[in-house]
Length: 74
Image 1 (tube, rainbow, N blue to C red):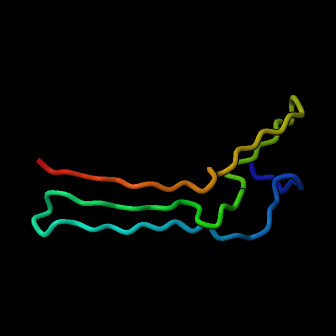
Image 2: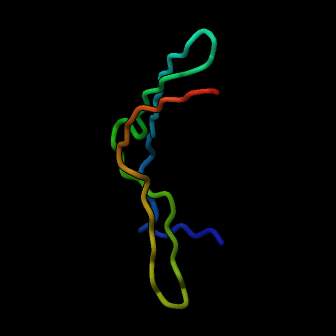
């Protein structure tokens, strides 16, 4: 059921992720650098209201995360 409850409304937003990869010409290895949630925006992934218990639950997206991935093909 879809409900437009005040606690679950949020302003419009952009979530930006980025990645760049370099790879060997023989495709045996690649190195990727990535950043998720570049602007570190905290937004709802999900919010629910339980009408029976009167409780509200919510989850948020992860904060900015970044890292490097190294892949090898055998």
